[in-house]
Image 1 (cartoon, one colour):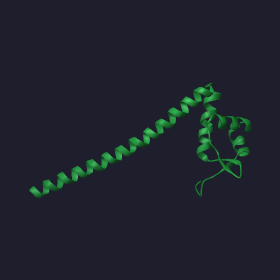
Image 2 (cartoon, helix red, strand yellow):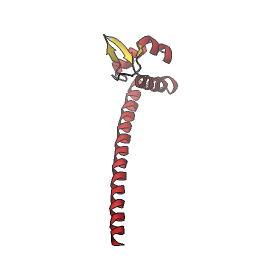
Image 3 (cartoon, one colour):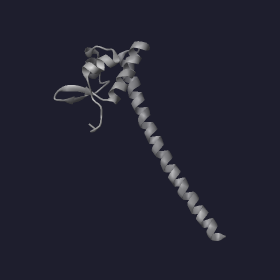
Image 4 (tube, one colour):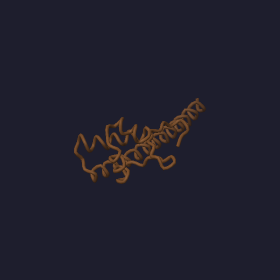
Length: 112
């Protein structure tokens, strides 16, 4: 855990998201969320709250069942990994293109 990371107890998360503690425990059993533990007490981060809110919206607002939620979460995680990979590739390409242009400019000005 990060030093400055906010942590929420299960009771606070239930109030914030308007759900029963058993719902959060069920989501944990299903593998939708993995809260940290401090002395066997579940604690949730802001990232956990965002993920829980997403799961709750899928189930309550869109009527997605647990199997569907699992598939959507896995796809979402893969998309985030792919997005990070693409950003890294674009950064690499930007650096490579910049280096190529600098070499061409140097060569051009040497010829003048």
